Length: 375
Image (cartoon, rainbow, N blue to C red):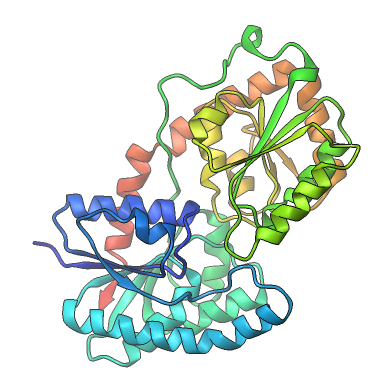
């Protein structure tokens, strides 16, 4: 049997990064490997397949705290990293695994764990963040001694990691490609009446995903109906309440629906446009690729992996945080069914050529499995 694998995540929530990790866990189990997953309590732990072993970690990052709660959360981070390190140390000593770190904020615990054991396993880090803040870069440098190499999901996410001293290779995200797009890719099938154009955002409801900017943009474009799909992370419930209050203002009342958790295929079948409005750069948003595979035109913010996904006519790009530019992009798409069709066709072709999961997942697996180094 091959070496056991230890996957480490800083959060128990499920977003795009954790979705990718679950796919990697399935691959490892299918290879006959012993799989251990170290993560906090939450939806991620509940979704783990029966064939793997789970080690409980404390939360190794922040989770939407505000005010005094945020100060207390930051002050408690070193203690939680130490607790996480002790638990990881036991796994390293008992299992002697290869390690895949799925989270930036798990790196400090891994470094402390490695320093405290004779089994000096250096992890492969799957980079799901574009390091855009000083805090992120500090944490990345803290974890350098625990990592043999990094696998970034986009060129944009690779650059700052390389600047922090890591050897990096790029292995792009991929998605399943449905045999037929959810939306029609012929002009005759496009929405003929601008008043029926339906726009959606599918993202965790947290501030940096850009929901505020999107609501302000939609407020400037009468005739659009907006679906907000996704749930808040723990600690972000007040932000969802803020969005609901904004949606009740006269310029938006009756035009915004909050859907909660959804089946992506179901909303892609009815949306005319999807928006990825993140104000901080995404490493490689899976949801944009999923929408593109389903024939849904995407408007995204012009930074990070989003800019790579939508380049060269595969979507429309707007400056991050710019509600007026986003409103103008939505007006263009409302008034031009042919443009929506052209974007949908180009986007689906881009996914078929570069982001087919049948190709990208094995490439990511090979890169990760080769990255961890036992000292």
